Image 1: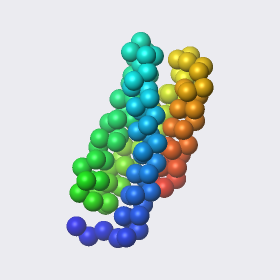
Image 2: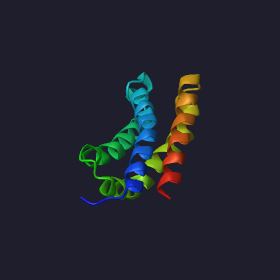
Image 3: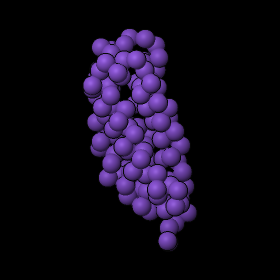
Image 4: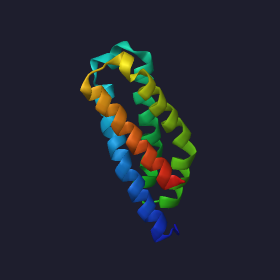
Length: 116
């Protein structure tokens, strides 16, 4: 596997942001609201699907494939984020949900910028 150090650094930078996505996904998955709201449940499933797709490449330290898959799946991640931001006020106005929406938006914006 031939990859540049730039690719490896980029993979690590993206994965750092994915750690934030993971925390939001975990919060949403374990919220009582997710059990009652199919749209919210679809958000945490889509976030997980994005991260799951990248896991084997991360484990193999295959930055080239990791970045390729991240770019391919980015639109799904962005759609899930947009949906969450849209429905969050209806799901819950609690500060935890507000902060989760902001955190997810920020992480996904940084992922998008890194992959562009």
